[in-house]
Image 1 (tube, rainbow, N blue to C red):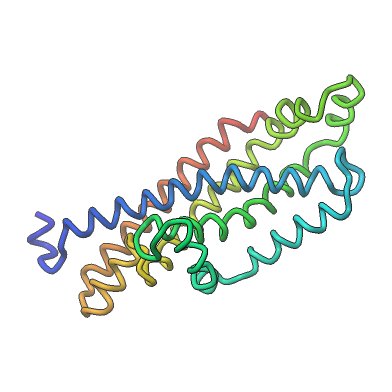
Image 2: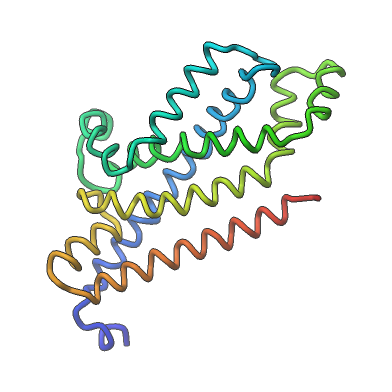
Length: 222
């Protein structure tokens, strides 16, 4: 049926590109979630008046976060080519896109984590400290649970941005639907391939947003 409606589309390549996009997005979002929470916790805990107050560490982490989240993604990919080649062994394919995807998204998410943590009632944190709770306990039992709805909402936004990043990475040979749309669609004047790639990317975005909204509502006890 699809072959008849869209005869100029190579469906084998479409499904391969779809898998690559899902692969890149999934791995980069998981890594971004972990790294972003670590960076966000550092930003929050080392800020003035907090448990690990340290102006130097806070300034250093904040500078790293601000620098990497300010660099346009397409430029970041180019800047990271030597690093990517050392880590992955190639600058082409889905795996080659992962370093740039993670480094580009993690600082963005880290700021969201910091904002989510700042919104927690200070009284709850102080109550835990007054009862002698260790920092690790405060993080695991107070900070993360209390901010979880906002953290999930933030990673949903970041995941959607990552889908867009994979499309941009595809233009420089990282594979995925962006690569398909550029090489098979734009370069060969095949509008059908471009439309299919765009529709599939939109479907991914809608699915991610739906799942994210569902999880956020289920975690929000207010």
